[in-house]
Image (cartoon, rainbow, N blue to C red; front, side):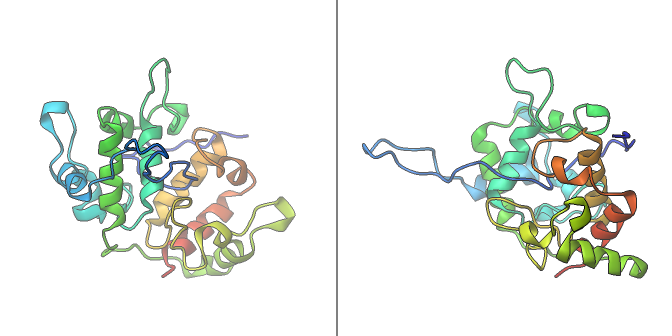
Length: 233
């Protein structure tokens, strides 16, 4: 597959994939399970970071309450909690590994690896829960009317001749996503969606099922459906 060159994002965000994290529970014998995520602590870390641990405030790139004003940095507000936590974990380089599970252009770590590396599992759960509870106040919009027909076709019906499923099947008809599994795409920046689909297609990013779907999409397909998804409400 021809590699698609793409620029490194200031802070590659958290988009497109399947979550495998479970919700907190208690063991049958009465022993305490994982601590329940704390949205208040997540909000504090998102807004202020933690200089003592080398953690930069997420808001500096992703905006107040996850409402980004910079198209290369995705909107994180209103994304599913479990999905966000998984993506943060995927950015980290695990013990014994040379690369994180989620990479960017050229198969190299994105800037998010440095941002996420010092986060604990509890930090990631807390931040993810905080963002999941925030409203998307500044959604992006579609901007290219000429792409609507193709974008709508792919979103609603896929590309059966190339075994590309309808996007709506996983991300819902209005693009709101599916709790615990698939991210919200409505209101996301078109250029960010397009960038991630191209990373999936090139094989540079392959931390979920989209890796096996995007490689059957053309540049025109990707641009059209990215723009269409952004305008869904």
